[in-house]
Image (tube, rainbow, N blue to C red; front, side, top):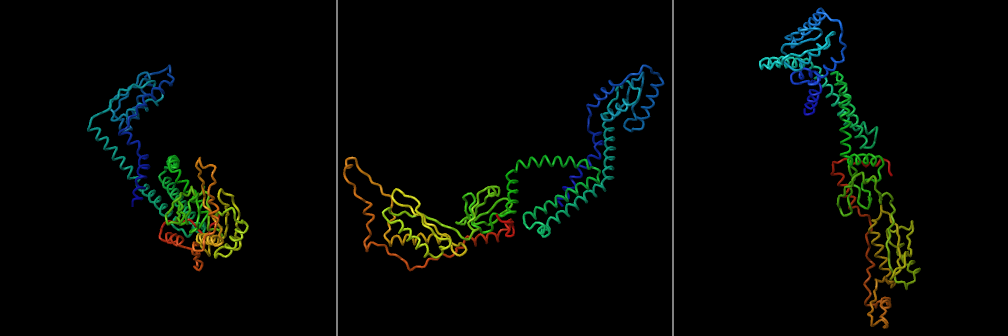
Length: 462
């Protein structure tokens, strides 16, 4: 009912007013510029040399007959002498006075019009005249009411049909499998029906010229609103592009400009991630569309790496061989692609080894495999007395500059005694299976939410 009330008000303003503008102007308006226009037109007339009383009589008779046919000018008296027309009497409004002057100016042979009309300010006459005009206006409105109601009904019918068609998502999904595009097609269909309804209604009322003004005003308003909501429009367009070619799927582990998390959903405004510590992250789609995205889940095989520092005195080739043997024995580290150990750098206190290994994320947990690899590498190095030194600083006093400092590095390189060796625990099986905690939370969050998700497994992938 609120929609129909708004439509009725719209048509009442834009339809009833143009039909009866003259009557309302007669009641209230004062045309101050009319006298100037009459003076300009009189100045441009050519005055004839020959004139006669018969000519003046014809002008007077003609004007008197014209005024007698118009009710609000019937009391005006006309006198003509040598083409000079003098108007006397009373009129009720300024518009009636201007009308009389205009008619007198249009008669051929009139040289000048002398205005001696008096506007009647009698309250009784004013009220009577106003009442007559209001009754006439009301009758005109009642006469045009059926066609106005028909126009409103037609417009409302187009509106309802367009809204009904816009909700037939199964039809649009056949045209565009993407949910977002199907919804967009429905909205466009509703807009087209509303526009056709407006054109049809204005055609019934013979006001099609008003449509251009409405569309022009709507265009200017749309431009202003577009500048005001530029970011919102940018997000909306980015949502369309992201839904056409999905850079990720639900539950993919991604990094968007350094922000990591599992994908929960893609909405018309933002991409929702669930971080590894369980927090929701909302990133505007315009930022996602322009961002550098790392998708860790798209490829099942993923490589991990970490650095280990060893004492420069050790045989580097033997240490690399030992590290590779350990990598090949760890559950979850793939043999193909092969693991690798490289000498990365010579540090101030140690040689830096970088250890690489691959794991299958669909079978094993990435973080667990990496953690277990670090643990076993450390344990193997300890068993083989491979020292991983800490930074050592030597401070000498000025007076002791010639005294040999104690060689702390040699002490660190000495092996620990048997009773000082840490107890190695080698009979414990470490679980490296996939941990789906975050994935389950993301799936539950998607199922609970009623917000649309624009990610589709059938959509094109990037």
